Length: 114
Image: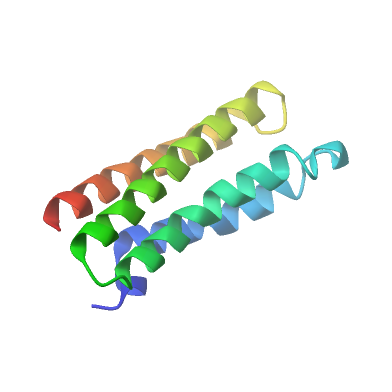
């Protein structure tokens, strides 16, 4: 199966797009701070899924999925922070954080299956 067909990849990619759009509205002073960090964490999730899937062993794949989980947790916290700073509405932050929780569950399941 092509990694881009995995539901966890599709969802995490959609979240990257949403984070990019969301952070476009952040204050300019955050361009090299929270905006950049949120984009990096969000894009790290599908990037590590892809990188791991193209490694030679299952152990390597699991390692990269673990990194993806760390990035998803980081993105969840950054949404919490952005909400508390007033950059994101509560409902939007809660919705995106919930989606990252789904990604984390899916990654955990994929790691178990491997």
